[in-house]
Length: 70
Image (cartoon, one colour):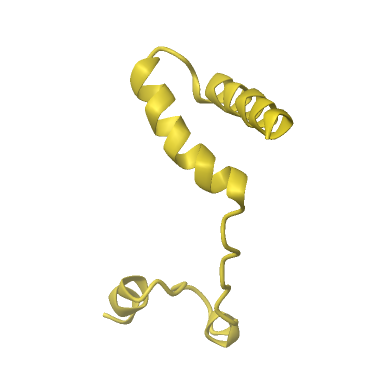
């Protein structure tokens, strides 16, 4: 039952020391990550056969181009 409660609340369920750990606050996404998240959805929908690594390279090139014209 304790394990279920810990999992439900997103806590690690092994070891006593894990109770003493501080909760890690994630850093907010930077501008590229916010933009890439939506752009990746659009690109992957249009090009379903392309692997994620190739999509990431394309997104990087597009972002670089956008930065150069702005």
